[in-house]
Amino acid sequence: MSNACRYARPLGPLPVLGRSARAEVLGQVLVGVPSGANAAQGAREPAEGPAEPAGGVLVRWQMHADGVLTLEVTDGGAATRPLPASPSLTSRGGRGLSIVDQLASDWGVRDAPGEVTVWAALPARARHARRTGGDARSA
Image (cartoon, rainbow, N blue to C red):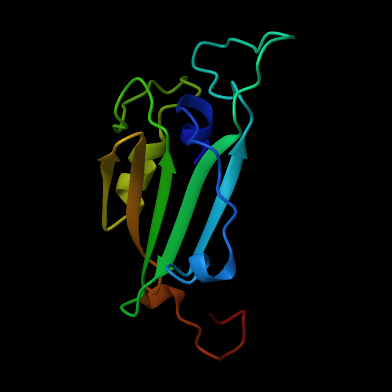
């Protein structure tokens, strides 16, 4: 999500979602991104001029019966396609999708007109994550 807020264009104007729209997935959040928040060029908004419509990033999640949590982050796309990188040890960034690749059982990128979605399927109910009902110290 941080990459979407930092590098990608926001989605168009954010819709106001009612309870019925939220029923399609277990959860979703629309995160507002201030105009010009994608700091890839480090540019700031001019003090005057027309304001861009409010946009943002859409985050969705769903827990499946088999214990897999699916997460999706949708934004307006960026200059490059999301790919895992191999940053140097001193690099300040570039590790996000490599971490997702290690944690997720599967992940990918979906393109649609005016938007890009990065999704990941994470095993959320692994054997080590189960509660035993015993003392917390023995768990």
